Image (cartoon, rainbow, N blue to C red; front, side, top):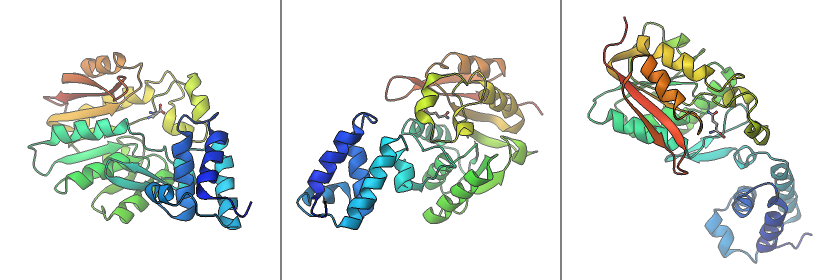
Amino acid sequence: MASLRIGEALREAQQRLAARSDSARLDAEWLLGHVLDLTRAQLFTREQQCLSEAEWHRFEALVQRRARGEPVAYLTGEQGFWTLRLKVGPAVLVPRPETELLVERALAVLQGRAAPRIADLGTGSGAIALALAAERPDATVVATDADADALAQALANAQALGLTRVQFRHGHWYEPLRGERYDLLVSNPPYIARHDPHLAALSHEPLVALSDGADGLRCLREIVAGAAEHLEPGGHLLVEHGYDQGEAVPALLAAAGFADIRMWRDFGGQPRVTGGSMAQPRV
Ligand code: GLN
């Protein structure tokens, strides 16, 4: 096996991963690129290069773990999100491309607003808070999480990216924001219902980051309900939600007194982000 070439190794891994992953080729490329410290383009131009036995063993071990369902991001320890490379481990949800829609809508809301104050609730890897901080150097960004391990991961990302202005605070949703108001509240909370069959395929990621243990709307209700107390007049709330919550979440915002309520679909055409503004927040 010591003479296995890059091209062969990739083809073999792709075949083994096909049953488990619908991006088997890409997964194999990310994993081998990680082992060899090469980009995917570099792999492509070195198909004939032989792997050493040690490299082959390391690749083999990663392919086996991927075949058992571990996300590629946990195996390589990183994931691209927006313009950033984030470190991710099993304490945090792997940032999804759908969540970039939330970042995009947040930047649109902030346009023309100088030095905005932003809070990200349940920040996980820090993906949303860090993307917004990177785009808006004039913003004050605070990110909360109830999980200390997730916060440590987010903090490590902030430091690695030099985005040390972002403040990380430990606590449940608004708990660490007592008495404070923001121009924009953003969140990608756990929104998968307890009995949703999709959870089975996500078993390597932290369940508390995926499911609310209830009907899928429990955390979204808490976040919407607490928003008025933490928004400046005219401030906005933007939340990510499930594909099947495109009516329920706008209704929650309406019931809480939000105006200008809008729902956006992700690139797959699924309802994914809802936002609204609060003209006169409660005192
Ligand atoms: N979008 C994720 C998924 O369905 C869930 C993220 C979340 O619960 N916040 O895989």
